[in-house]
Image 1 (cartoon, rainbow, N blue to C red):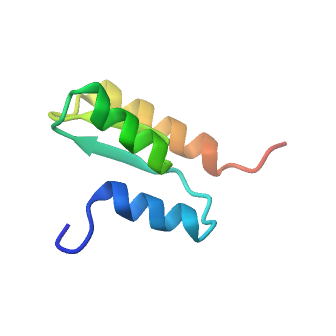
Image 2: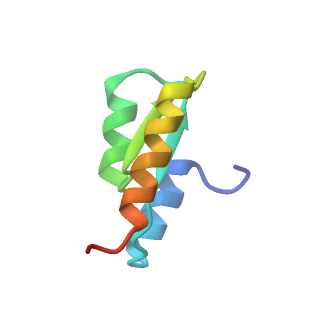
Length: 70
């Protein structure tokens, strides 16, 4: 992203109190990068190249997150 990276964008979204599912996609497989993403407020962090089963999981998690409780 030209002005913000995903970590900073997530921080700003969370600071505004917006409660949406945020999944990050990264090429960094180190633990520190993953921890930064989670600390910023990401709900999921996935590695590139994205596998189909990981995409499916992310979409299922996002859908459950968006559905109001019954």
